[in-house]
Image 1 (cartoon, one colour):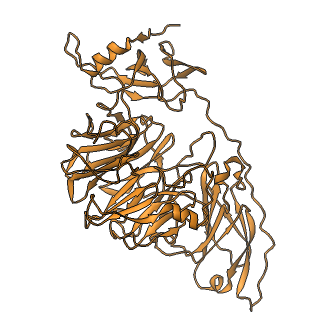
Image 2 (cartoon, helix red, strand yellow; image 1 turned 30 degrees about the vertical axis):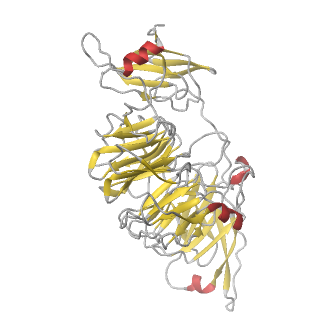
Length: 575
């Protein structure tokens, strides 16, 4: 068997040559080494689509003035490297706020050229929202809750939502008493663009989310249906008032057509991530609307990233050249789609079909070895780096950047080679060889396999007829097409029944903005009687039974069918 010889690199010399742009005799610019950063947030100037900012978790704060071709470090202080946010003032694009882990809130009035510490020194900044009608009105999320200023970044600031106090007052079931009772980086603060006094705040172990309709003066806790769901971020539609999306922690995307009065699953087509330890199914994060068409949304998930062109009715996976473990922030500009991921920034100019990395200027990785070869007629160079992700590749075109190709690879790599006879890339890991036959896009890593629970199609219980004098009527229901919810496969903090939600609606629900006529829930049974007002069932017009079931392997199974007015109703659900 033939294979190409790996190129071992004198690390120090290579990094110096690549980092400082030394050239060959032909004066071809040297290709920088692989670079990456864990991207927490991307933001673009409304005045210049090429002016983009990136907040990173451990790499600093960056700015690009050329649409992502190159990034410059604009961190307020060299020792502050962990950032969760970078937010532009909607009334002045040169006015920025940034913050992260124990950084305090930083402010710039010149597009990031210089910074001053505005408020909350040494506090962690998790999220920030600016009133689009009054840019002096700011809301900042810290681990202990929401703070408000009506006079800009310098304050004074008022603590308008005390989260530890909420946890204590409501006896929130915290999974571990040693875990701090505070918000983390998954919770986000958002503001309704059509009603700036309405704010949404992601929830933790209380589930659901928090909401204020009076500019933060008062708050109430809201659920996303009776099933326990953590709403990490509520995202208002940019065009239609009252249309909301909720990114949930492991149950996919949900949607409300009536300003949060009720929610429906909006995840059809999104495949669940497979991982151990198993703690759910579909984590959604970082969604972004296409400014030209709000029906087009991009969203991230673990090892899968998604796009919808019909406002969440159906989703499809974006191109496989987006090879990150997960994306935490999508950004859509008039020129491109950007994905901020755990391995840096990707860019697509064809709506997510193909992706390229744009990481030049971010922190360089340390190269260990390279190899090269041809796969399906295309010439590639591959590299392994210290740490994780371990493997990168690039086209041999000098203008090409390195891209991480470590899909499902949890291991470091010590050697790399290319077997030309079979066009197979091989790396050595602590757990043996890993092989790829498509240039590194996918590897022969054994997938996590869950034991499938059997589908149960129970018979409906005995139908109970009601006498004419009854105010309520028993109605018999059986759910087909789902396994019985089994929460033994998840950790105790996720064992929170009920797992079955039932609703009776009009045929035009939910798109017409109405609310369900009746709702109920079961712990985990798939067949039972419900008690419904007789007047509801006898009222004119067709009634629809809708069902959502928590499936710990696949997120949510849903179904709807007309109510059978003379007997039992059997409803079929699907993923």
